[in-house]
Structures are given as C-alpha cells and as structure tokens.
Image (cartoon, rainbow, N blue to C red; front, side):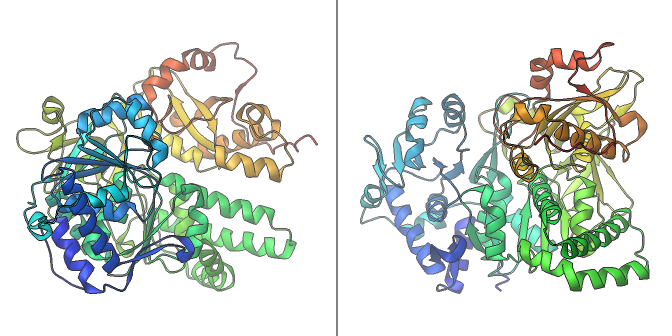
Amino acid sequence: MSTARFSTLPAAFQHIAALAPHAIALRTPGSAQTLTWGEYAEQVREYAAGLAGLGVRRGDTVALMMSNRVEFYPLEVAAQHLGATSFSVYNTLAADQLGHVLGNAGPRVVICESQYAGRLRAGGADIDHLVCIDDAPDGTWSIDELLASARIDFDFDSAWRAVRPGDIATLIYTSGTTGAPKGVETTHANLLFQVYGIAEVLGIEFGDTITSFMPSAHIADRLTALYVQEVLGTQVTCVDDPKNIAAALADLRPTIWGAVPRVWEKLRAGIEFKVAAEPDEQRRGALRWALSVATARGEHLLTGEPIPGELDAEWQRADELVLRGLRTALGLDRVRWAMSGAAPIPPATLGFFAGLGVPITEIWGMSELSCICSVSHPRDVRLGTVGRLLPGMESRFGPDGELHIRGPLVMKGYRRQPDQTAEAIDDDGWLHTGDIVTTDDDGYLRVVDRKKEIIINASGKNMSPTHIENTIKAATPLIGAMAVIGEGRSYNTALIVLDAESTGPYARQHGLTDASAAALAAEPSVVAAISAGVAAGNSRLARVEQIKRFVILPVFWEAGGDEVTLTMKLKRAVIQRKYADRIDGLYSDRPAADVREPTAEPAPAPAS
C-alpha cells in the first residue's frame, strides 16, 4: 500500500487508480456488474470532459440524485476533477424540499435517474442541464449526449491539477430536526484530513472491501464508501436497496464495515428471530446456549470488568461450535473492524455484537466535522464510549457541558448562511457542537445527548431522552421509534411506533394475517411484547428515567415524514405539537383504554 499523502481528492484518486488498474474497484452483489480501477479512471476522464463541455468549471456545483449504483462513482469523481462542488440529494425528498436544497446549492448540472426528473423539475430550481443516466425524457440530456459535449481541446490534467485544498468538495445537508436543512460546506482539506486520520487509527488497506448501502447524501456513506475509496483504494459493493444489506453482507463478507445503530439493531433482531424460529429443538437449544454465553461475555466487556477464566473458556467453546458459524452467516467473519455511528447505539446492542465476536467500535462526529471526530480501534475500545478525538483535533467544554471542537475537520461554513455559521463557529474557530459530552481521564468521550433535547422534569432532574429511548428499544425489535415525554412532568411517558420491517416477520411467525400498523398496535400479543420490552428496558434505567405509561400509535413513522428526518432523527417539537392530545392523555387521571403500563407478564398467544 502506498504511504503517499495528497492534498486534494483528484490527486489522491489519480495516484490510487494507477496502482492496480486491473483490480476491481466497484461491484454489485454477486459481481453482476464490475468496474476496474483502469475503467473507472477512464470514465472519470470522459465524464469530466463532457461536464466541462456543458460549462462546468472550478467553483461550480453539480448535484446527483440516484440509488447506490456503480455509475454514481465516475460521475461524482469526474465533477471533483473539474474543481466543482459535487453533492447528492436524498431520493425521497419531495418537490418543495428539492427546490429548497437545490435553490440553496445552485447546481449548474443535476445528474439523476429518469424516475426523478419530473420531481426535480417540479421543485422549480434553476438548473442549466438535467442529465439522466438511463432513459432521457424530453428536455433532458442523455449520458451519450453528455459525453458528446466534450471539446477536443479540453485539458483534463490541467483541470484537476488546478483544484486547491481549500476548494469546497461537497455539500452535506443537515437533517433539519428544527428547521430547514442547512448545507454544510466541506473542503478537500477537510476530507483528506478525515480519511488519513481514521486510517491512522483503524488501519485501512488498498483492496479492503466494504458496502455502500446508505444514501449517498448521508456523510457516513460518502466518507466510508466514496472518499475512503478515492484516497485509499478500497473496493466498494453497491447495494441499491438498504433492505438487501443482509444478503449483500453474506455475499461480500467485507473486511471493514459500518452502519447506523438501527441497522445493527435489525441485524441483531434477525439473529434472534432466526433462533426463535429454528425448528430443530436440539439446534435451537445450542443456539440459545451460545447466545447466552455471548451475552454474558458482552456484559463484562460493556462494564470493563475482566472476563472470568471459566466464562472465557465457555465462550471459546461456543465460538468454535456456534458463534463462528453465525458470524459467517452474517457475512461478518472477515471484518477486522466495524463502526457504529450517526446516533447513539443501545449498550445492549453493542454488548450483543461484542459477545458475538464482531470487533465493533462506536464513533462520534457530525456533518459539520466532516463526519468522524472521535474513534478508537476495537483493540483499544471502551464500550459505551465513542473513543478519543482524532489526532490534531482540540476540545473544550462549555459551562453547561457542551462539547466545543477546533481543528482541521471543522467545516468552512453553512452554504449562503453567514449568520448561522457565526452562531456555530465562534471567532476563535471553536465549533459549538450542541452535544453534551463527558470525558474520562484517558480522553474517552461519552455522549449524553443533544443539548436542546435534555429533559428537565418537574423536580428539576436532567435526563437524556435518547438514552432512555435506546435502552428500551434494545429490549424489543418491535419498536421502530419512540419519543419520551417528560419535560416539566412528574414522570416519563412515551409514544411508541412499531417497526415496519420487524412487524412483518413477527406477524408471519405468529400467524397474524393483518400486519398493518393499526391492527398490530391493538393486537394483544404485540401489546404484551412491547409492554414486556418497556419493563425490561426500565430495569436498566434509574427510577426517575423509567417509563410509567405509553401508547402504541397505529401508524408507522416514515423517514422524511412529519415525525422523523431522512436520517431517522426525531423531530421532537413537531411530535409534541402533532400528538399533543395523545400526550395529555398519557397524564390523565382517567387514561384511555390504549394507554398502557409496563408489565413483564408473558404475551398471550395470538388469536387463531
């Protein structure tokens, strides 16, 4: 592996692409489609010439809107080679949301799948050229027409060599939990520092394999699947639908991998469902035994307590007989390290995978910090913390415990929003993160919650709703989202929404014919399972944090809908307003019939 370091993405890509031009750089599951580094580099050169022919120059902006596919990469990287700011928009954005984002970004060219062309036009943004990578509807450009726009005198090498470290490489639009999304301007210097920094801590090698399955508008996917690839030469498997990630993992068996907590929770739920549904009694017993051993090991790892010799020996036996096979079935048997980030992961989920033998590390960061600001290698990890700051970054704490960060990862600013930029970054260059964080004597950080989301109850007790929610969600895979209520109240309650992906398998497993949110919210066995899960989660919380009452809403909360952002973060103010009557009912002296209290009683059998 080359140890050379570069100051712009194009310079890094040109070096990496020449190392092994016949090696596979991009693929889809089963290698149905592949692209070598040599083919990749040639397409970048051709697309850059075409984009230049359409008038794209250094400092212009190019937007992309498509699924996770091989074609995305050479188009995106081609724009970078012109010195353009290239970024992705979420495929699920409504027309008015697209209008806001594109109006703020000001792209000269938008490259999309044809299915999105109508919505992009309906957004009303002023776009010079709309290019479709598949069928080209009237009024749009095809890929062939893009390529034909290239001028004979285009100087590719001069174009990419003119790119400067301080140029804006991409825009990442924040999730917009409290208002319209803001465009985070991230430079080449930001991203190169980021990639080299995590590589130094975690170890990333040319040819390491990873998947791209999260939206490319999400900084986590852009960093791990795009920028790391350009700079270090990883092989990326493009998964066009995140629902297919389990099968893709088993196909690829990646060497490095990362996911948001909800994906880790779903993988865990999948294992538990598989064990519960195992028809062979002897094998089911062996699986349960191995998972119980893994759980015991995970609990010791979570608390930092030494693993007793007897438990370690039993785990080695469980690993040889069962756990190794489970890791292989998951596709995580070759993983050197795995990450969880973008939101706090429930400790029980972290412990589950640690006990299973998956070397997972929790990271912390934000779009305004180029993605990852703190991380530790799994061999140095302290479960429950988000590691230590990357070398070269500085931290301090405000009087209320808010973490402030300064250093090369800090964004250039918010796109066309100088006032908001000044609010986020003070005159001395400190980014005010909005996160309440604690640190130990060795510099390991532990995130408490977002500053603006801390609950203060009627007695003046400060609590983290995210901690409460994650603890309870970890106790049952049926909960897709929940919002803890308790500000100014004498006790905590919760609005609970079922998980759209877990309820289907649950309904089939229990012979339920109606898997709608409304039917399942009233199904006695589901209510009992949720109630038991809340009780189990409560047992891991302080008494003041525990949920006393809850209601299961007869709806699913969709990403990008009223209640949650596209990255599944709760819009708490919206939820408070929209469900004000339901919330008041949770505190009524005479609560409605669908207001529940936690109970550990066993679930009744579903009606046949």
